[in-house]
Image (cartoon, rainbow, N blue to C red; front, side, top):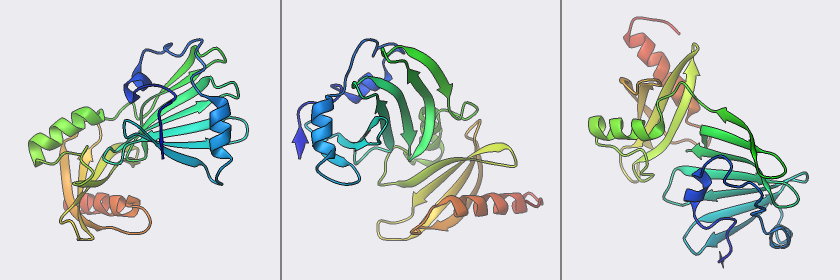
Length: 214
C-alpha cells in the first residue's frame, strides 16, 4: 500500500536543525489511529518515494520508523498524543548512532544525547573501508551487519561481509572503533540469532594473534 501523506516530505528533514519541529504537529493522528487499528503489532505502508513506514501505538505515545529496503539506516520518531514529535533517533544496521533528540510539548529541543560519541562516524568509516577493502558498508548486498561493541572497555567496529550471494559464510572484520584501523579478519556464519557471538569470537582470535588472553 502507498500513502501520499508522510509525517514529513523527505527523510532529509529528519536531520534539520534542532528546533525545526518547534510548534509543528507533524503526525496525522486520526490517520495514524485508523491505520494502527487495522492490525496487531503495528501497521506498515510504503510512501510514494519508496520509504517504508512502520506505525505503532505504544499506549502513552505513538511511534513511526522509516526505512528503505536498500539502506542500512533506520529513522525512528516518537510522538505525543497531539501528534507533536518528542524523540527522534537514527540507527545503522539496528545500532543507535549520532544524536538522540528530545523535544518538549511544543516541539522545542530540550535534550540532545550523543550516542557512541567515541566511535568514528559511519560516513568516515565507510570512506576508509571503501579505500582499504573496496567494500561499501552502505551496500546491504555486500554487508550483512555493522556492529559497534565494546570489549574490555574499548570500542570496536565489527563488519560482517558476504563471501558469495548464496553462502552462509561471512568475512568478519574487527576494526579499531575510534580510528577505523584494521585489526583482524576472521570467519563467521549467518545464524538465526545475532552476529554478536561471532564478534566476540573475532575479538578473542585477535587477542590470540597478539599473544593475549581475553
